[in-house]
Amino acid sequence: MNLREQLRNLLPDLLPDDPAEAIKGTELIRLVRVKLGEDYSDATLRYHFSILSYDPTSPIAKVDQGQGYYQRQKKLSGPNGVVRQSFFDDPAAGEGDQIWARYLRLVAIYERLCLQRGRYPFLLNRTSSGAPSMEGEWDVPDLVVAEWDLDPGSEDGAERFDDAMLDLRRHLGGPEVDLSGVQLKLGLSLENFSSEFFQALSATRWTRQSELVIAEPLADEALVDALRSLGHQFGVGISSLGIHLSQLDALPSSKEIRAMPADAFEHVHNRLHIQRITIANPRQAIDWPALSALRKKHDSVADMVRWLSDCLAKRKPEWVGGVVR
Image (tube, rainbow, N blue to C red):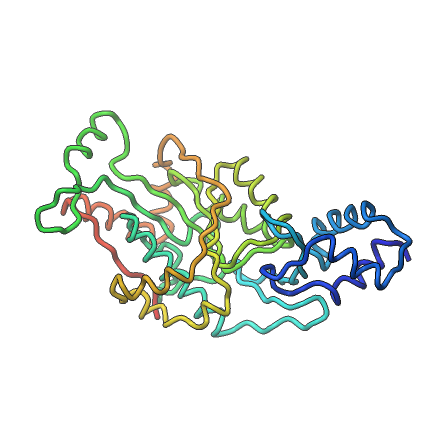
């Protein structure tokens, strides 16, 4: 048996499960030598650790932006980026209500984060009942986020449009509103990141910019490098909220998250560890012919167009709901 196969068999017993507890290469070499003896040099072992960490089928992963290795978890892709995860020798966990509740909480958290930054989300990915489709669409993102110039000096404290800036945008031929297409995923892995990325790119290609947002922390250096390469190549913004699925399970329901006052939501916000992988590269303009065609195909897009028109008519932004809880 060659060294690579020996390491595949040996490493699951030596590596910690949590990236936060990753062990440095020097310590891992020492542990490996206890099992394999002194036949291999430090350089040879480090080389094989590095090579295996970029192999999605291997049990070793290297932490991103740090030193150390941990045990990669096997994640089997489900619909709309939902994952079933297990360790290499464990059966996969089942899907069901728990995954559905996690996804709805993710949507609610992202909506609240947008509002904190003066951005207004509109849920596009939804069925006739109002609930998001777990499979997602390839031409419509989960959310569209609208950004307007807001008046910082509004007398009553309510958010209203800055009419002078809107008029200037209009006269200069710019859009009165920027629309970002956002795809949300509970988690990604080396096995599924490519398909999930290109679904996000396809679904958001008609908006001004594209965003892919993942709930779980992105600790695997190989996965982060692969996502960063795609993000830079296609101008897609990629980020992680840095919240583990078990932490999502412990939060209040999505309905409660959406209804929280600002000080209560701050406790949720404090559980996030936002990680920016790439910055979105804005396109020159919204693809208006594509948007017009999508409005005829998807009722949710027609609803979004009406919402945008209503906001412009009232000269103020509004947050509208769309998720069934």
